[in-house]
Length: 257
Image 1: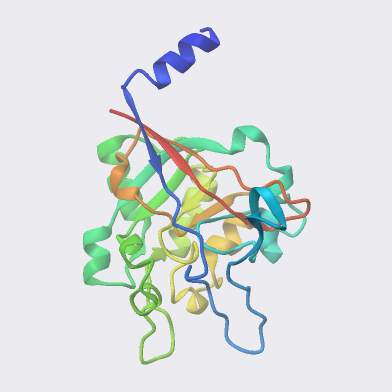
Image 2: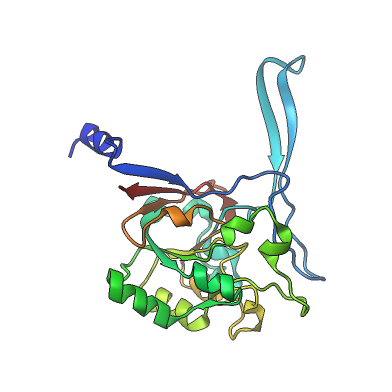
């Protein structure tokens, strides 16, 4: 296939391009850890010049934020189990895209915010749509993207002081990492783990197990409802930060019509 034919096919009208990123700005919601742990700063932006005396013909800004703010990519070295793994700068180019596997649990999560993705959910998906291939991105569709601008609903902190948001179970993470050898796990929530994952054994299994096995995470995604269960391709390219544990990202999906 020539390059011309590839471009022609992509823009033939047979594909839709879906933006999976949330807007990144000063209002972007960020994870807050309890004391004594340090927290990530949010996003901030400051003007350098804007067609003025500081730069009469150009506009540009400086910005600052933590690596794990907004829609972002988690590299293996983000977690202690992956500390000997790779940074965002070292991720092979062919790991920056893969088939999107979208497991829809939005209705269940609306009823139960602590709903976990279980192995039985994965097997039920496979019975209908076929075996999850290696090197795929597995996304848990929860409907949580609708709360991305509402901190109370997005974090859903209960009377117990814990966030109550959906995520994968320990067994599901082990199954996906070991039995299906996926690229990584995707969520609409602030992180790849469930809100109550601090109570699991091991704690925060998606971070603990996925990153320990050299796999990735994509969080705070948008528009998963525009993707089919299978067949779309996710392209997620983080900033090439030397030694970076993560990066804000604007993931895109190519969806066959």
